[in-house]
Image (tube, rainbow over all chains, first blue to last red; front, top):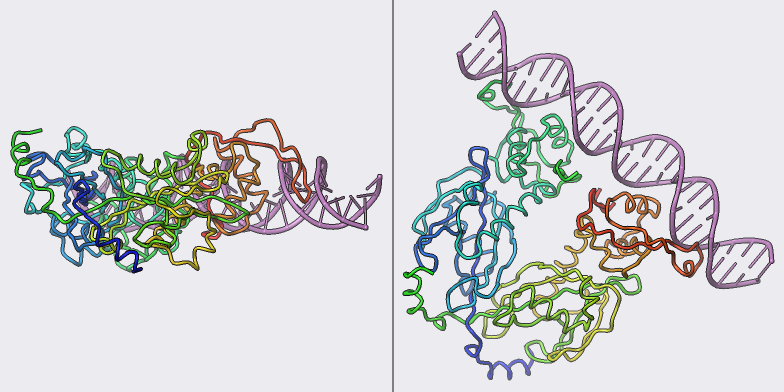
Length: 249
Length: 249
DNA sequence: ACCGTCTTTCTCATACTGAGTATTTCTGTG
DNA sequence: CACAGAAATACTCAGTATGAGAAAGACGGT
């Protein structure tokens, strides 16, 4: 550091500024019963005690933002490390409108978006009364705490776009999956039916999206059909060419 | 607000938390002399006094994040309102690694990305000694203050991607432009030559990207060629289908 | 045993893409 | 003032991707 900086530091008075806080909030999405679900917690502490909110909390003094998001993800989902490795977790957007938090402290929140595979039952954390996977349809009828409804909407929108250009859909399924399980992810997130034949051809033609395991499911679908081949993720993160949603054409 | 919240508020002590600050920093890109340039300022105050940095500053107490970014953009570029309307300005990413700011205050910065059209000479603001458009090539040899090199890299990467799916390239050119001026934007940002014929066909085929004005340039190119037709932006913000960069195919 | 479902593969018409070429209009130079 | 070089626009053609439909099997439930 320069000498001028050192001199300036001595006269610096942090508490002269109005108090500010920074939190991370998580939009954690998963698929249950062919519907998109989000993890919500019932707040056990004020503000908004008793109301439903996205999981999140203050960033600790020595913690970087991705660390804080990963910690909250661990605390709120109870996922094991092996599963956590496969979870997509990326920064979504930061919200800081004055008054979005009623406390006498200006709170900015850095929202993160996560996609979880299987469905461990959620764990109520220290400051949460209760935690639950809520279907997106259900959330539209509830009033979420803070500006979390807007954050959730932003997260869902981002998820829909991410599916087109990234291999993110594999984060929603198990380590080994069938092509129709993968297709189901797209159908649920986009909310529209896809042509099974064309989807199959497309996925197989994108280099590095999936690779064959050589095995098949133990039995066919519940209502019939042959055993499906099992694939695993092929290592590609970007899809070339992209898997565009039909409705946007 | 619930009663429980009100009770809780009385016991709340903001200054018990370590001090935190939030700034906005801007990656403002433009094209000069067929090269991508970024607006940098020479810091007039510690920390990093005398070093080059992205323009930015603290978010004011009653200001939302987009307002703070717009204010900084106005202050630093001196653009007039009519020009500002056409500037693309959107949130990029938030950075908050402990220690990224040497002050005894944890500073998070919300980075914004802006694309400016013509090239007004920059204006030195209150806490800036000097301001200048720097070519990207030049910035690679300089050490920027804070973690601004990483923020800049993130902004450039985002810009390259945005060109593919949005009509953003029109923010870099004047209100009326020729197809080859538009092509030049893509070539400069992507750093590769495009096929003039194919680019022309593609731009004309994307619905709502450009619309004819019926006029042409006053004279041909400096080294010959016919007068080019003038177009204006056609109103579309998303491009369907996208204009993919050739190198990624 | 049979019906309906599901996976996987084909076919075919249409659309889009990259590469190359042609035509015409202009600028700058001798 | 003719000419070379350059640029704007249009056209061609082969290769590839896409949407829609259909077919061939494999399997579960009844």
